[in-house]
Image 1: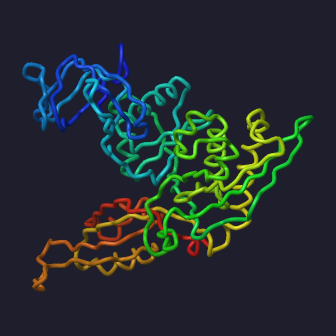
Image 2: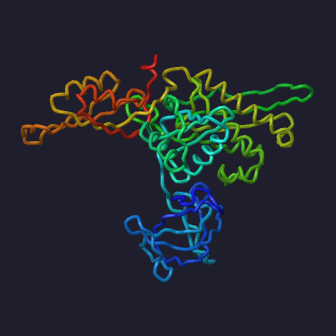
Image 3: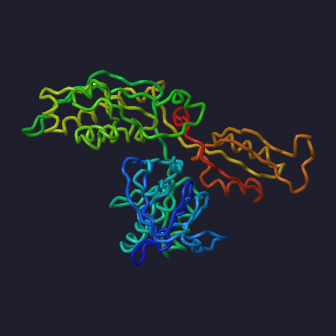
Length: 425
């Protein structure tokens, strides 16, 4: 997605770059748009015109038609985002959703500040447009602060530069970066049925719920050995709980949320409670299983007072986490780690390797010369590869230059989250 209009005039000038897998598209065609996050909710979009791409230049498609296999730019689509699938509007067209584009989760967060309230409004609008173009950016705004989450220091610097060049926001200040930690479970947590019974004023809220928290995969148990790819918590409602809630046994939780307000309230309460673990960080790679539910007034009582079920679920999860999660064998803290490749003069390899080790990093290999033990030529650089926690390489570029006499350079790529409880203690 490229927002050529930047939100001025009558729209954002959205230009959608698309590849045609089958069939053809014509100017003025009406298309069906499906998002990977909601494949059962199609919406219609109308193509205004089509452009071909040639070395950064845009030209109109010959005869206004793009064929299968072509890459083109579509103009006039208003609500299409990166990763959506576009289909023809024919009646017999099956609703097929392609996998879309996956983006790694942000690993670094900074606070953004401006000088005035008018600039704050411009900043909010500019960040909204940048997030459309770059889905790997995440923005969270409160009355006091604006938080920008990105994939690393360079990603933040590029975003700040774009705010200056493209939106004229020269006075944006970024606070010190904060690393995005997570918490996860290594074993199952289950304390049995939780009974919530509390009277607020003249209203009594009562419900019993049995919740089990467990790792999403066996890889959680090796969190200290192999980096994990983080995933949002999931909620599964089991058969006994569905019977009590009078839910369809065959529907998945997502569709139940759309048709049953009580289930929607319950799942939101569970996910909200998992946003903060025992150490204060969001839970990840965790499955929340709702095994059973009961209430003295039955499902009708909970329908009339959904706050009772919400409170029971939230308190049950908080009790499970706080009572068990600080056990080293059951849970751990995760920190983002980066694959790094460092180019340095051969005589500085020893210093760099020692420096990586002091930063809790692991050196993978060191490449010097070739497999035939060729002597390294003057001016040729060696490559050091390894895995280093993100928190240890913030501002590493200047430190590497100092360590190597200005000749060292490095690249870093997010590889996953690794357990770090023993380090922080």
